[in-house]
Amino acid sequence: MTITSFAYFNHAGLLTASLSVLLLAGCATLPPPTAELAEAQQAVTLAGNADADQYQPDLVASARAELSRAQAAMAAGDNDAARGAALAAAAAGDLAAARSRGQVLEQDLAQRRAEIGQLRAQLGMPGEEAALVVVPAPIADAEAMAPEMRLQALDADPRYAGRGAYERLRAHQAVDRLAQVRRSERAEAAVVAARRVGVAEVAARNELLQQAVDRAERSRNELLVEASRNEAERARVEAERLRVQAQIQAEETERLRAYLEAEAKARQQAEEVILDVGGEQARKLREAREREAELQRQEAELLKEQEAATDPGGT
Image (cartoon, rainbow, N blue to C red; front, side, top):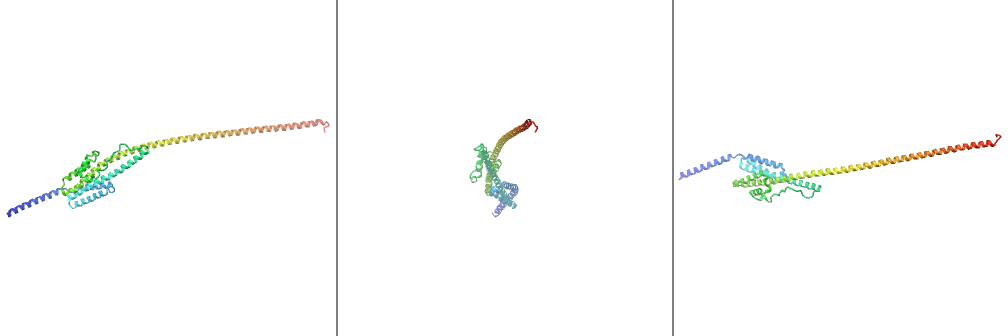
């Protein structure tokens, strides 16, 4: 009995040791999560480049903290913890970048539509623009739903058909992983799955936003061209008005100049006539005076002759 028990425990110990060796060998074959860490680092960097510190500060801070935790776990040789933290950091970084881009697109769309409204009013085109791209609002309380339910709702929504295909693929992979992981890893896998589904939702909506921004940009450019044409036409009309006005002023000036010249000529002619008349009168007066003097001379001679005739003695 003692021998049997010893043999049993010896066999059990050998079995346990063999299993331990196999488990250690299996763990040793798993490579370090260098690819996951690199992806997480890239996601955090892209989030920073997308101004996530301004638009999604809490989420990008979580991504950086999880990346630091993954790097620390990697340095400590805990590959499982490093891999889980790296996946969470990458998902957080991608979600922060997607949400930040969405907020930027929302602002761009609002600005474009405001400019379109101003241009339409300026051009006398009241009313809203036709064929606007309708962008649905984000699903309310979506984070309270299970990731698989959110993903099903996204796939079933015809407004997002074919949009965010790559992000949906990663969301499906994360949801499938959530269903397969051990209980101890489920909480972290659920966070990653929720974030990946969120990325897919935001990416699909961002594509619609981008389409709306592009459509609004084209409409704004068309209105700007029309406004430019109208402005050019107004400038042409104003230039023509000024040209006609200048021509009228030139003609009026020419008429005034001709009138003044005619008046000056008439005045000169009148002065010449006056001078001519004055000269003739002076000539006549001179001739009259000369005749008068001649008559006086002749009268004096006659008187002298008469006196001589009446005085025979020659006294």
